[in-house]
Image (cartoon, rainbow, N blue to C red; front, top):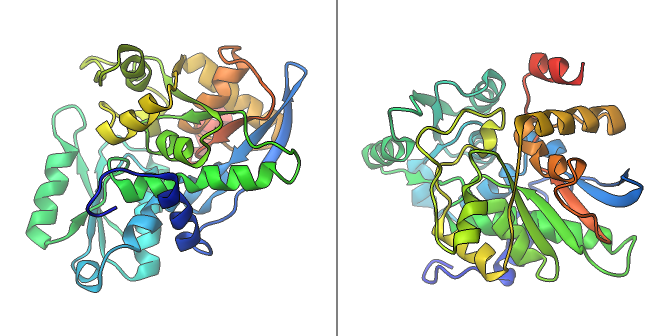
Length: 319
C-alpha cells in the first residue's frame, strides 16, 4: 500500500491479522426494532471507547524504528485522539494530539491519561491540519490522519471483518446491510471493503451530511461554512477524503442524515433497551433506523461506533 494508494479487501484482512490481540473483539448483539430482528455491533465497548483504536494501531505498527523514535502527531476532537494515544503508549511512541478547544472534557482527559501531549486550537478560526503539519515538521514526526490514510481505512475495516465472522455463527449469509456513523468516511469505507456483498449506508448529522451530498452529486461537496454545531462532535468533519469518497462511490453507497432529536432518541433507546452507553456520534446510524429513514432488511447491522459521552449529558438525555 505504500506505493499504491488503492486499498483492497486484502489490505483489510491483513490489518485484521496484524492488530489481532491489540484490540477487543467487540460484541455483536441481536435486537428488535419495529418487530424485525437486526444486529448491533458494539464498538462503543472497544478499548478507548470507539473503533478508532483499530486504525491507529494498524497505522502505528507500520512505522519503522526511526519513525517511532521521532513520534507521531494527530488531530481529532477526541476518539481518534484517544485511539492514537493508546496505540502510541503501547508501542512506546511519543504522541502529540491537536484537539479543538471545545472538545468534550472526557475525551481530552482520556487522551492525556494515555500519555499524549494535547495542543488546543480554535476550530472556527484555525486549521488543525496546518497546526499538525507544523508540529510534525518541527519534530520530524509522522502525521497520523483520522481517516485520510490507507492504513487507517484498512484498520477501521476490521470492524467489518468481525461482523462477517460473528454473523456467520448465527446466519448462513453475511451482513445484508450495514449502517455506519460517518465523519470523514474511514469506517464506512473500510467496512465497505471488508463486506463487499453488503449494502453500506453512511449516516451523518444534519448540516454535516457532506458524504451524503457528495455521493448524490458524484463529487466531493464540503460542509457549509456556517453549519451549526452538533452533539455528534465525533462526526464534525468539514470535508470527506478523496480515498473514502472513491471507495463508497464505487460501492454505490447512499447516505442518510439525522436530526439532533433523532440522535438523542437513539442514545436514549440504546440505554433503555440494552443498557448501552453510546455517544451521539456513535448513535447516528441507530437513529436512522429508529426514525424509519432506513429499511430493515435481512441481516441488517448497525454499528455503534463510540461510547465517549459526558456523564452529565448522558444522564440528561436518558432522563
